[in-house]
Image (cartoon, rainbow, N blue to C red):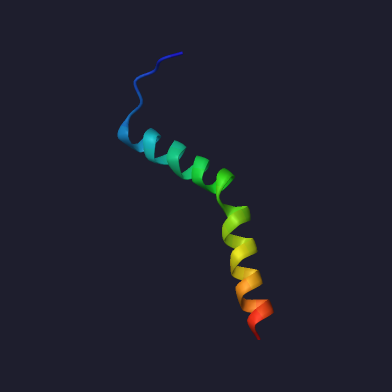
Length: 38
């Protein structure tokens, strides 16, 4: 399954992956820092 992606497709895929993988970590750490320290 090898496809030649255009640069824009690569950026979209990378953004989609980072949104899928990272939001839990960022949201949890952000809410914990803001909520627990005050």
